[in-house]
Amino acid sequence: MKKLLPYKNIEAFVFKLWEREVSEDSISEKENKLLRLWRTQTEKNLDAIHMKESKERVLSGLEYYFPQTDSISISSVKSFTTHLYKMAAVIILLLSLGGIFTYTMFIKPDVYIAKSGNRIVRLEDGSVVTLLQGAVLTVEKSFPASTRVVDLKGDAIFSVAKSKTHPFIVRADGFSTKVLGTVFKISQSGKRKAVDLYEGKVAVSTPGVPVSFLKPNQKWTNFGIAHTTAVISLRPVKNSADRIAAILSLSFNDVPLKEVVVVLESNYHTKVQYPKEAEDKKITADFTGGTVGENIESLAFILGLEVQKKENTYILKK
Image (cartoon, rainbow, N blue to C red; front, side, top):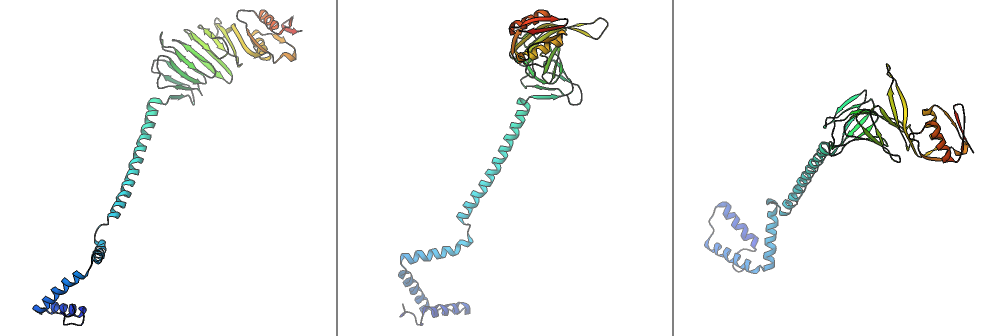
């Protein structure tokens, strides 16, 4: 190669060519020939490895001017992931809102509250409920169904639309009232529960005692004592708003003697004395149809005691 070039080194030869290009002087035929030979010889002296490295260096120099495949891929993945999260968030939000809407419209019970005074609630079956102050009525979305069921806290008056095939049930605190069509009032004050019937018929049930069936002008109550039930007749007094109360049925199921005696004394207007050690003895008895004397005789028999009466006081003793 050096024999073909009249210059000391390749740099000088290239420099001379550059000067000719700048000055626009023509390159001699001999110099063109030398240049072709130099290019051919140079390419032959480059083996495959050097050619590969040379191409890689050229390509690496050009990478800056071209979009990076990895960058596009990573950026695309990040963008896609971000959009995916946004889409998922929107879907979850829509599902949540849809779930809330569905629950509110089709599942969540309707709750009616009489906050500051009485409130009238008209149900879909035509029944009308007058909630007294403080009462809460809960009605399932399925109402009215084959069985019309509502839940009540507090006091309310029900005017139930008549239906021979679809019973109306009011579930209260510890007892329920079942009717087919009637007007009645439910009262709940602490442990004391009561149902007053004005029209029709109702059946009142509570755990542990027989079902009570009421007719108009009758009242069911537990006297505020668990496992106790009574039906009371309320006869109106002529020319008066008062009513005369008379016990028609009275049942106790596993009730302490001291509580049984409280009921007997308050409803029969009498006094009952018994041994102190017997006050917590559990009594199960049905006093339906008996007079006050007969009922206390039955109570004494259950306790294994004798009965002695002095004026208006019954004394139970061994």
